[in-house]
Length: 125
Image (tube, rainbow, N blue to C red; front, side, top):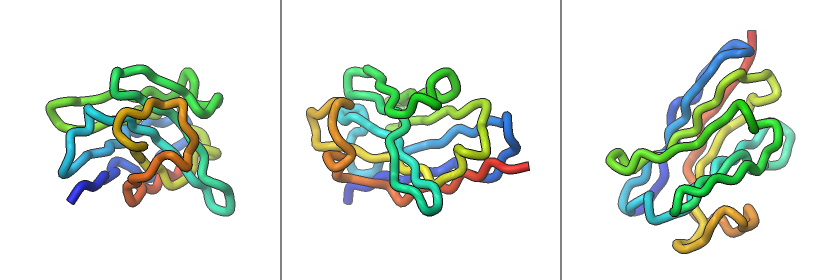
């Protein structure tokens, strides 16, 4: 059964870093666009960053520019979200998701049909 599994979340102090992982099981992640999203308590889910199947990147969140990067490891069938200079407002549950095969990053959140269970990131001193 195809699924996405996020990991790497945790508690970090402001200014710290975390690397989130999105591992795919049952399918080849390199064939798909992968988006990272987040949802803070009481807020709507929002897009963060995306990497397409041809390795193009698109920032959905302006505040992520210069701090977050996205990369793929084809051998591990995993996509990473490297988050640096974390701020308390980055506290949220982070999800990875894929749209249908062949889609790029220029799609709406509703087009992302397959989601992981999420991983909690808490930025606090």
